Image (cartoon, rainbow, N blue to C red; front, side, top):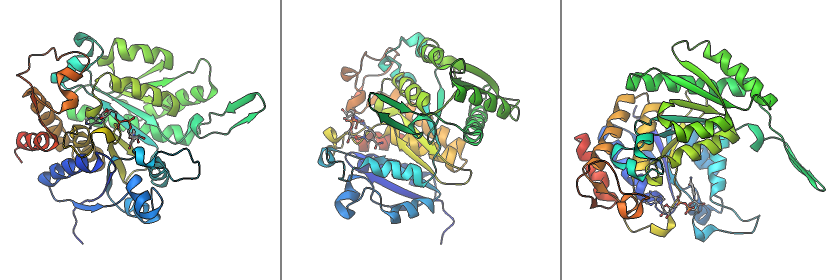
Length: 369
Ligand code: NAD
């Protein structure tokens, strides 16, 4: 067997195979990787009757990293609670791989700041990372109904908070190493009301003691929601529990205004494989046309290099190459200024509309690959 890192590739449905092929070409140009392509999502339902087979989960657990496209589509939409659904594959992967940390960077490309719903002077310089706890809190606590009364329970243990806090502080350090800026973690809670938040703040503060080079600030979640839109450039790493992180990561994602540009990583215990995927879905409306934007998946591959393989410099090269092709004016149809909220405000050359293959080739060219 070769020593090359082994990547399980799950293209999924809709545009998944198109965008994953782009990221794979890019990875192949950067070094030796062993790829193991498998079915997951709707395509697995068609072939095996379930969205995620035990065999595919085993392959993922035995890999060095997992690259996912997207799953789902009208073909598998159903109201039958007993019918298999593509997203069961995603949940099965998160649970089976013990992925407790979700990382979403938000770094609007300078050429696309005009797509942000915020004014250019507000969004300029934004480069933040939301670290969300993924397997605890109110989504996983006891819930139920008794007549006219319903309840959902939020529970967190010291261990759960400790490990996600460490992920955030480590990420802040790594980002500082890549960018040269002073690392900062903004921990979000509601400690004036919630006991779980008081425990959260206590444990995060303790973990911070091991990271004296990293500044720690605490923000109440309502304040954090406001600050994210009023001064996004002041944030570095935003650390939040599951529910708060779910909401804040979507708010932060909207800062860029471009769904086709957002990567994500889900990580588990040290040394365990992570899952890297674009934030967007399977876009069945444009599947098979060759027009899907591959950049979110390419940037997810960059996250794989940084967080999965410790190759931060290669990740940064990819991010710079993506900025460069956008500065050259290349746009997939979803990014073309006719379809974004406002036209780009920075001085960019005339836009050229391109498809998935041309966009990928342009990134490769910028990388000198
Ligand atoms: P979507 O993200 O697939 O699409 C929303 C809009 O954005 C569509 O107009 C689509 O064409 C466009 N878009 C998305 N990604 C694009 C890209 N890379 N390039 C160009 N345009 C892009 O969300 P949706 O329409 O709500 O969901 C479609 C399917 O995807 C559903 O079955 C949903 O369940 C599934 N979904 C999967 C995931 C995942 O796999 N992680 C996430 C969200 C939605």
